[in-house]
Image 1 (cartoon, rainbow, N blue to C red):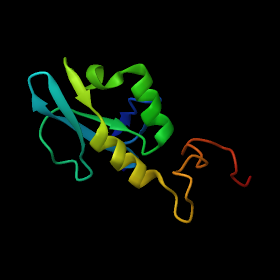
Image 2 (image 1 turned 30 degrees about the vertical axis):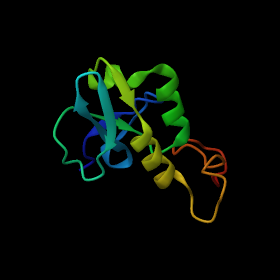
Image 3 (image 1 turned 180 degrees about the horizontal axis):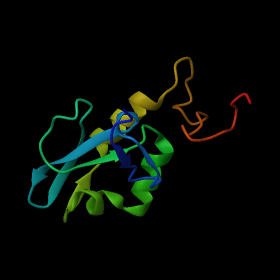
Image 4 (image 1 turned 120 degrees about the vertical axis):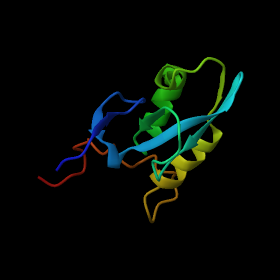
Length: 111
């Protein structure tokens, strides 16, 4: 069984849900905090993102948070940014994951 697929709000590519980070908006009124949901149990509408700084940057640039979660107001991405940075750093590197290829990238893979 392959499991469900979801679309990354950053790069807009479909991937198995288990390879993406789910996040939800917590808050009310005009300010929302994007909270990572690694256990996939938090209530509310969720969206998904590759655990990759490039996808996070694309989502920021496209202002995809509000559309993906159907929000109006200010979105605080600090908590999600910290989580993505923590899970995207490859072991043994100190560059913050900047040199790590995207999971779909063919660069550096043996043929």
